[in-house]
Length: 123
Image 1 (cartoon, rainbow, N blue to C red):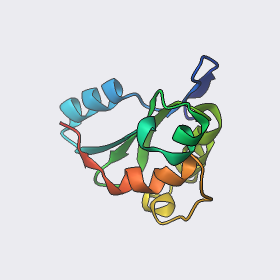
Image 2: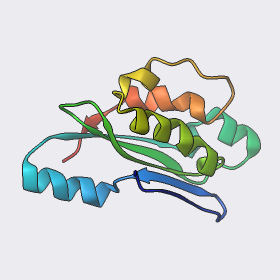
Image 3: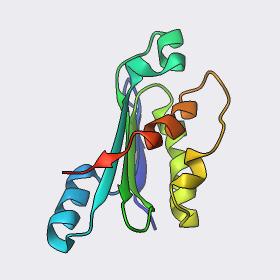
C-alpha cells in the first residue's frame, strides 16, 4: 500500500507516498536521481478566488522511471486533490499521464499539469 493521509487543519493537508526527506535519503543512498515540482497556492486561480491562498502543492518524481514517489497538497481542497495523484501512483503510470491531462477551470487540480511542467532536479 501507498502511505496516504489527510490532516483536517486549516488549510487541509493531503499526502501520498514518500516525503521530500525520504526521497532525498533514497537519492543519497542509491544515487538514483529524482525531480521535484512545487506550486504555491498564491499562484492558483481557484485558491485566490476563494481567498484561501495559504499553502502549496509539491510532487516528487523518480527521474528514471518517471513514476510519482510522493506528493503533498497543503491548501484549499488538499485533502481531495491528493486522490488525483494517488490514483496515478496506484496505477504505476508515469507522471506524464496527468501532465497531459486537461482539468476543469477554475480548480486547484488544474495546476497539477503546470506543476509537473516545472520539474527540477532534486538537489
